[in-house]
Image (cartoon, rainbow, N blue to C red):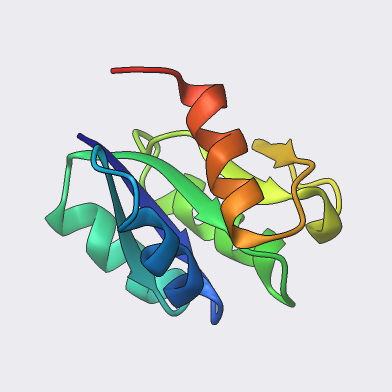
Length: 107
């Protein structure tokens, strides 16, 4: 099972798409504080996807600062270049999730 933490107001869309993948679980968080809480409670998270919206850079900074052992961070290219975050070219939820799954590979 691969667990993805999707952060942002559109995270619910990814959770719906993730439900169609038998080996993927998408956990959602509304913002940085919620993401940090979920990371602290769930050490099985394999990657964090920060959705393109205002504050994506700040969310990434807080996650890296508060949880140096956090899983790899990803964001859509539309979010711009963010230090320590791998950029994904996809523009829709399914494209982003598929690209992220290819990037982290099988467990």
